[in-house]
Image (cartoon, rainbow, N blue to C red; front, top):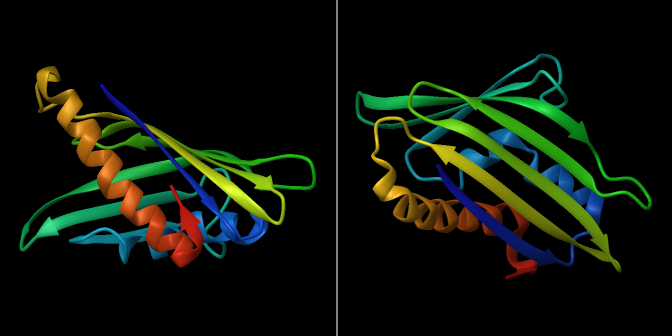
Length: 149
């Protein structure tokens, strides 16, 4: 199991920050070689939403299906929280994103636990380091220039 945490401070208000980090299709533009689809028409948010990230190079690739199992948008005095359970054959685990109001801006915390059944556990630190880098860059892109580490 590879676990990692990413935190960012942004000038964005909590509601806008939440909207950006839970805009699942927008994640595809931030992660190379990845396409994202969402199934739960007509909305793409809330418990039960299934997000599938397809990572591929040519015909070789895999799907990373995730289901939203917790959906609590931020409200005055309460942070927003979203939890996704990874249900794929290649990647399992979970990710939890929280958005906390801080003054006129907000703080985002992304915590993820990845399990790669085909990769020996000795590589967990490397997987966590790559995860921090890839998802950190994705989070920076979603938040725009107003975020700091």
